[in-house]
Figure 1: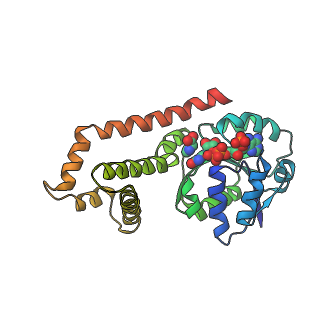
Figure 2: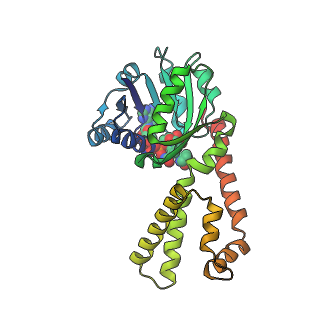
Figure 3: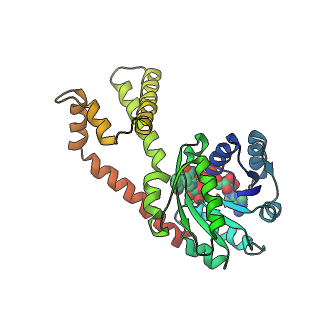
Amino acid sequence: MQTIGFIGTGNLASSVIKGLSQQDTDFRIMAYDVFQEKAELLAQTYGVASASFAETIQGSDVIFLAVKPKDIKGLLDQLAQFNLTGKLIITVVAGIGLSVYEQALPGIAVIRVMPNTSSAVLQAVSGLARGRCVTDGQAKTAEAIFAVLGKFLWISDSKMNALTAVSGSGPAYFYFLTELMALAGEKLGLTRDEAEFLAAETMVGAGKMLAESGKTSLELREAVTSPNGTTYAALESFRQAGLADIVYQAMEACAKRAEEMEGEYV
Ligand SMILES: NC(=O)C1=CN([C@@H]2O[C@H](COP(=O)(O)OP(=O)(O)OC[C@H]3O[C@@H](n4cnc5c(N)ncnc54)[C@H](OP(=O)(O)O)[C@@H]3O)[C@@H](O)[C@H]2O)C=CC1
Ligand SMILES: O=C(O)[C@@H]1CCC=N1
């Protein structure tokens, strides 16, 4: 049995721990946070262990870094004081490239991962970028973790910011669209409760169709869109308002922000 030690127990680590704790895995989990009460609460909720920083580092085979980008430099300085030989570092920190870790922790195995918060319901999609010192066994360990949490793909480090713009931040775009649909429904005469219920259930059902129908998003969209019908009128309005450009610009801003972070925080 391998031990995964989480450093930082915020939104992302909570989603991952929640996901992992739902399944019968070969992993034992330890968690540390600067605000240790947060780690303790999480540990109690999901039946995992909370521990000090040193205990978590020394007792883990896989050290899972889940702090904000602004905190990674200080954390790497702390980690460099430990003997990490043979351990695997998994980092989910947005925007920080593998070379930063490999420079700070020479010879140590690092896998950079961009998961998403759907890990909590075992429906994440994660991108994994393999560092130079990772053994095949360590790569398999990472695959075992992210396969439990949903789907994953190996990708080059250089594509990680683009992947972040699609799938790391993507759930927020989806929730935002749900909020906007509910607001619009309310303006059109529904109550807030009716509009929120209808918008959320529509997204859940449409997502399930994407997952289970075997059809592409284009095919599914066409099946809803009658010629010159109601959906057609809405989609034409989206097109005329330049929605494709709006989405591109937002995702470009996301990837650009990820790129800036390394220079800003390391
Ligand atoms: N949220 C998401 O959807 C996703 C996030 N990520 C990445 O995951 C990372 C974490 O994000 P998120 O969980 O949202 O952030 P949170 O702020 O929710 O969690 C980070 C936690 O780490 C704590 N912390 C800070 N420094 C240390 C330290 N040195 N040792 C231990 N704990 C520390 C923070 O404490 P305090 O608040 O007191 O500073 C906080 O509790 C980020 O780098 C983000 O880019 C990746 C994919 C998706
Ligand atoms: O907003 C962020 O910076 C993090 C990274 C991907 C999702 N959330």
